[in-house]
Length: 116
Image 1: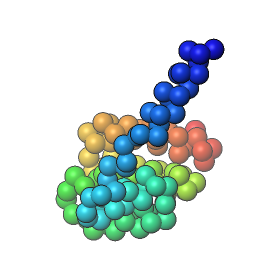
Image 2 (image 1 turned 30 degrees about the vertical axis):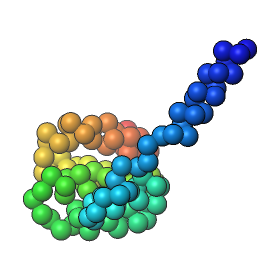
Image 3 (image 1 turned 135 degrees about the vertical axis):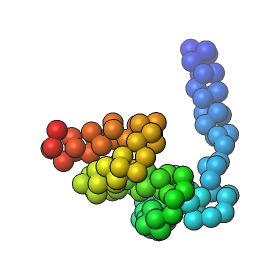
Image 4 (image 1 turned 120 degrees about the vertical axis):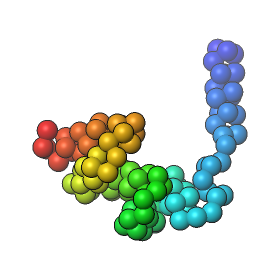
């Protein structure tokens, strides 16, 4: 019983001392949007990611923003919109699509909409 109690106390202490969200102290549109995503403020996150994704700049950050925009759409139950974004990512950079496991997420969107 004492061992179980110690384990619970250690677990609680570890959770209480968890590191703060890493992107919330950084500057820039992407960092701000990612911070909002981590805080589950999906409307604000969506606006930030969408601004970057629609800028059309050929940067790695644009693909990352598209990915998190798709994840935000999933969080908000907009699986068709998320699917479109994952397919767009595939067309832009298949290696990113593969490494970031977009195929699995696209499958989740399809299942959520009854298309799979």
